[in-house]
Image (cartoon, rainbow, N blue to C red; front, side, top):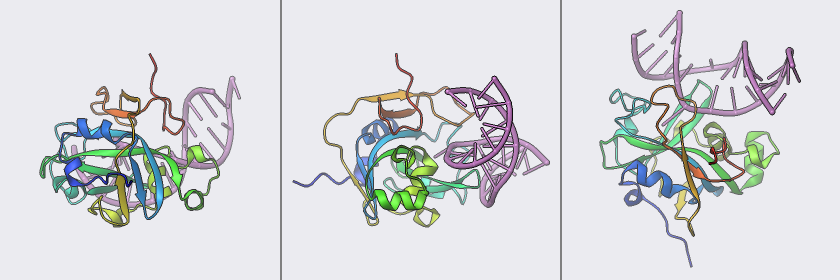
Length: 191
DNA sequence: TATGAGATCAACT
DNA sequence: GTTGATCTCATAC
């Protein structure tokens, strides 16, 4: 049987429902990808969100319909990708931070210039490099080629923690991931 | 293992 | 002119 394909309906909910639900889902770009193990939620009322200060040329996609891809340049070097959530105009999104590489390992290694499977996609900039995502994909639909997103099978152990690399609203526990995965950009604090 | 600098661009002050 | 949703490499313990 074929797995459920996720599209705009899945994303037309609160980022805080979508983000944990994405853990364990399978994300593919042109046949290359794997299992999502780490994301972060950015809500439009959140000072750390790009949309917090209102719409600009860069963040315009965040203000559009859910189920689209928002790509931006980070630190002048890397690309980072988000999935737009909630009804159009709410300008909230989920940042894709890490996946467990499953399909297209050879292409990921070539793009990244690395052998270590663990470092291929363990961070937002790394994911984009490994999957070949650039600003050319900004605004694209998640449910149309080259993208494909499939609902998870089973129930992963989802952990939450504080987000990484931000200074505003740094205390909000809006980072979600699969507890214990080897492919996280950083482990979750255990209790 | 841990810390620090450099790369490089767009938004913002 | 400064900062940032980052990553890599170099140098120091």
